Image 1 (tube, rainbow, N blue to C red):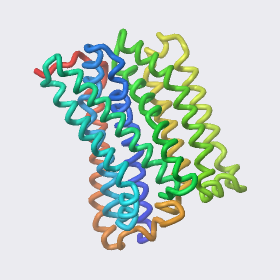
Image 2 (image 1 turned 120 degrees about the vertical axis):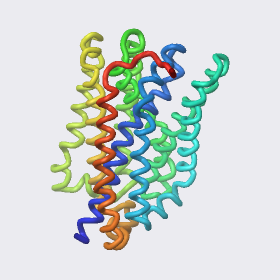
Image 3 (image 1 turned 90 degrees about the vertical axis):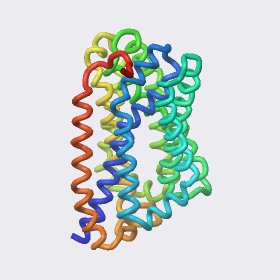
Length: 330
């Protein structure tokens, strides 16, 4: 049991953060895309995420909460090293929340201000999360290659969110906005693929620990299916996006499912690269874990909370399934 608990909490934390990237990723992507729509289309874009966006952010709270409670030593090191991007991310999330609510009450002449604020908060959040991911992969080392790698991730990370946002709009909208979402997805898919390729190449270059895991035998043979399958899914996504428009509009969920699969594969590769460390090259999971008694006490809370949030998320998405209707506040 003592060996199981740290792994359980590490897995729960990783799952929470992965779900956050996917779910909050699409509404952050829509926030970044919002300047490209007409005023009625902006309302539809906001309506498409209205029932979900607050609940989506629950997952990052859960993930960071598990880090704090189950791995206090790692929590202190990570947040101390990343206090600038974490602060910027929080500012972006606050700005998004304010803009989301204030645009409802704003007069027509002021609504554009809050639309820009929603865009700015979404972009700032996405850039900050990319910066945090890049710094984490380098083991929080800001010297040498570690100085430029977070910047590379930061500027490329929003491309994934743009794709998730466009794919979500393909599912939730019809007519002209759906066609525009398809156009945005076609424009964003190659930059997203290029960004993923650059990250895949750069990651082993900035971390010798990751390079050793991926490029030594027999590991290289066993791990080959991850990049190969990711490449096949990306090629399938390209094929899907550039098929006849009618086909994709009828099967819009396929594009979103392909992006989710790419995220799952990337997370699998990252989890393997990191394990058994919680901070690469600096701190292992078992070293960072709280005492067994503390973990056992918290275990039952997480064992109840995690399925409850999953059930609630499934329930909300099921209730509000289908196409988005006109935005009203009656």
